Image (cartoon, rainbow, N blue to C red; front, side):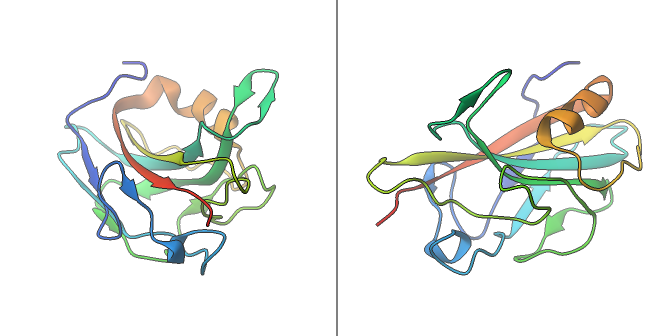
Length: 158
């Protein structure tokens, strides 16, 4: 299928699509992951993966751009929600070099950044190891992605 948007719906009780992410879920606040829920998974979904990425971050390196804040995978298809501050499942390595959620924290004076929370539906349970980067994860799951969509939140440092 490749990476094309599907009918999958992703939402949060913490913010609306294109709305501001509350300070609580940022590096200036408690740095706790927001609640997320989803519906309309494609038929034959066996597992899920989640990524939070900031394409507005002023960082560019060979083959990449932006900043990855969260990588979470090996989520069973029977799960329909991640509570605030979720623990469990398998954590990948974000661009801070750690395997935990690290919320928005753009450079001072850099304006509004957009944070893309991507949910990817997979046709297989892959039992992937902990610590994969976003790019390593995408390389391994790409042949199994059968649906995806995103929820975008914004944040600007005060």
